[in-house]
Image 1 (cartoon, rainbow, N blue to C red):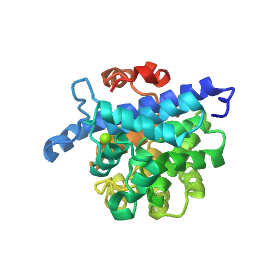
Image 2 (image 1 turned 90 degrees about the vertical axis):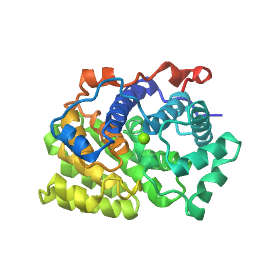
Image 3 (image 1 turned 180 degrees about the vertical axis):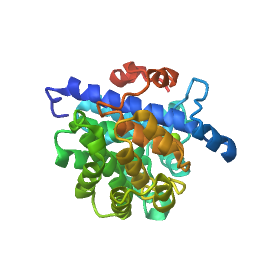
Length: 316
Ligand SMILES: [Mg+2]
């Protein structure tokens, strides 16, 4: 039996949706900047938007699963999350899942337990990929008023697919960033970069990802350039948490008050650009100054909020 939903459940879900919109716009738009590098770099420099519709990928699909679970249970029920991942994967396995995710999700659709399947990935190491971080910002928005609960719930959300502690640390870090942005949404965004990185560091467990966040903080306070961040932090080419999350946090700290500037900086890192832009979008959208451009929202493939409340009606 699930505990009762919190009294302010509806208000929590409102900020969850804001984060989900930022995440999915970042994901869907970032995905459109894969291709021949010279063309992509030129389009990014000129800020050329692709023709709609912008189709979202696995980042959004898995975030929708997470939001569905929070919406129904008011907390992160791991079995419900695994079931939602599997149901969505079965409905549409072509959302750009990575190799490890395909293996795991296929096993879940065949009835294996996540507790057995996730730790077996990557020869028994478990995944330390960026998949726990890419979907978690809405959860940070939901639990923004309670840091210990947020940390535990973010870790639990990652654990279903990412048994390696570093994959879980990345999820904790991004959930913390989302909560920080919501809690400081009325403060001038320009003052938030360094406090954000320090707050995240204070509560992220020791890990390669946390080490990278420390480097991101040093770079931020010393006025390091975006190019230095790209070269020293990584931009997700290895699709690991440690080479994705620190760069995302650097971009968030650099452009806390502009969804557009944050997006263009993040995508210019190339790398795992649907995921880096999903992470950054899901956090930055929570600040009062960082509105998602309405035209960008309209260009993104629609998300059916009906799906969040009517699991029986889930569509792919
Ligand atoms: Mg993706």
